[in-house]
Amino acid sequence: MAITKTDFINFTRCQRYAALNEVKKEKLDADITYQEYKEKEQSEKIEELLAEMFESNEEAEEEIDLVDKVDRQLEAMMDYYKLVEKEAGRISEKIFRGKSIYAEDTKEQECFDFSLNGIRYICYVDIYNEHENEINIIEVKATTNSKYLKTFGHPKSDKYPIWLKKNNVYWLKDEIAGYDIEAEMPIKKYDEFRNKLFNRYDIGKYVYDLAIQRYFIEHEYISTHTEDKLKNFHYYLAVLNYDYIFDGTYIDGKPIYNPDSEGNELITFFDMTNVTEEYQEIIDADRQKLEIYLNSLNASPCSLGNYCCFKSRAECKFFSPICGKMIPKKNSSLNYLYNGSGFTKEDGTKIKGLELINEGYINMLDVPDAWITKNYHQIQRDSVAFDKVYIDKEKIDIGLKQLEYPIYHLDFETMPCPVPRYRGERPYIQSPFEFSLHIEREPGICDKDKDNIVFLAKTHEDEREEMIKLMLKHMDPNKGTLFAQNVPFEKGRIKELATIFPEYRTDLMKLYDRGFDLLWLVKTNSKLYQDLGFDEERAKTFNFYDKRLSGSFSIKKLCQFLVI
Ligand code: SF4
Image (cartoon, rainbow, N blue to C red):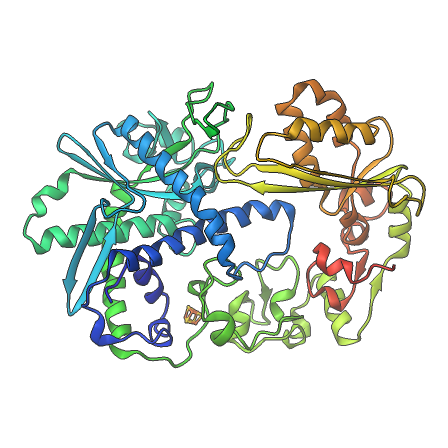
């Protein structure tokens, strides 16, 4: 068994991981077959792609067990990942010229490896592009450029990003000769954003990944005394372009991703040559740590931390069964709502997230009373301490009076596809293929046959126009209420359809304006209730809370309170 890039990432999480993984020390310099390598790395790629899809689903506020591995789901997504990789390879030849090697299932992909201190390190690169003397190493990620543009910018995230795009490649502005960064933001702020690229457990995750590849590549050349060739190497991330709008061209049933009307390509590139160079010291320190961990194989407990990637798709496989098993599923100290900045202790220091668990504040009631300063935290706490249900009937009653009949209970099912499927779509758009509509004509009056309308696409063809027609046949845009749990999701889909099908825009946007959210009645809507005359404090306090919610107003949690 050799150490792959994924192993490197996992084994350097903490001192415990390798020991729990039962690594066989004596096999660390053994060979690894291409098939074994692919299995390990490809499942990681698909995990990443699913993580992006689930992130898109946050808009739908669906409660998904992010670490629940479903093999069929992984298999189904493999084709999408291959398509992203293929398109990245095709477009890389247009941008960088020369020849790109980006085979999917063959041994054509370029492999780099080296051995050090009895351990063999190995990686294959997604795209190896060679043009004249230049070598471009390109790592394909099924994320989008919008994540990078939004996270690194000032003062409005998308207004002054730290990147400048030229010829479909994003460059860091400090690497562009003569660029006046200070005209846009203070250098200190710029550096703050740039430094985020070095946070491997957040937005710097993929850059770290590429930097490991660079480390492996450079050490192969160093070990063969050919490092002079390395000066011609450049390193890029290839990601989906969120600005790209598919024109709907198909040939033989397959989408053809031509540049769009604005000249955008489906894939765009980020130059990470200098950043990955800066990373090399960090990777070398991590490699030394990894060797210590592998030599000691110490499985004794260690503190939980950001390296556990708790509640993300990258969550460590040992979190739930071993390291974090003391955290109760319900009403733990982590279930206090809106608590990103944590609690302030008596001595003024802050404590948040997994630090609470590390310090023994495991259950909701373990958190000292004195730390609770927010009204809604007190409500949560009282619900557990005294088994008390909190309800503000007056607010709920007044909220209900805002509903106009008929009430259209609408629910879309969508596919956040990495690559656009139909005309007008962009990567990861929530592409609707089903809706269910229940029409409540008067309070409690809804005929289970006549007033229940369902649309389900029967083919993989574009059936969105039929879907719109059926919606508008049954929903009067001039009266009633569009009602849903997390209505911004339904409204978002309606708005997208209105943009793609302008002939229905007027009616669709009228429906859009009629949205009302179940969460406004249960959780609250500060602006709505202030407009209705409540003071700010009461307007922002929950209308309902029960300990069975355990800090979540998801539809699954709320359903248990339905009175049938
Ligand atoms: S759950 Fe966290 S502490 Fe435990 S092995 Fe994984 S990374 Fe390490």
